[in-house]
Image (cartoon, rainbow, N blue to C red):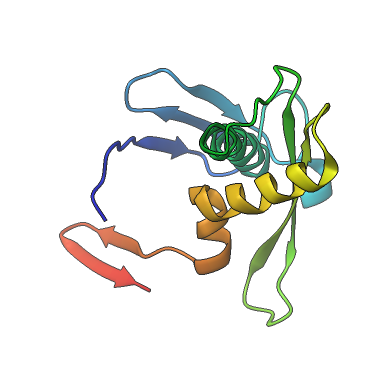
Length: 147
């Protein structure tokens, strides 16, 4: 794959701390939700950030496939992504669940369904959810490739 854009963010304090992009455009306070044993309160969490990123990316993919199909998406088109977290069945850690809902008012339901399915192929977040991603882990000078 040829990388067209790359960004970087650093978190401190884990789920109760902060995260910031290298360029400073994103700076958030992280708070562990009460449901996960935290204090809750003002701030965000990785699941909210993932849901927002996925929703924005999927709507962008919808716009691309709609444009190619010469279908006009109205400005009121939205994508809502719900992300859940809980213990995995294998007992080895935590897993995520994702539900995606596209609201495409004014479109024929069949056309909307086709666009959503096409966008699911185009969207990199959907691709990641279906196929995983190769993650390069590093610690000091050692780099380990995880498939």
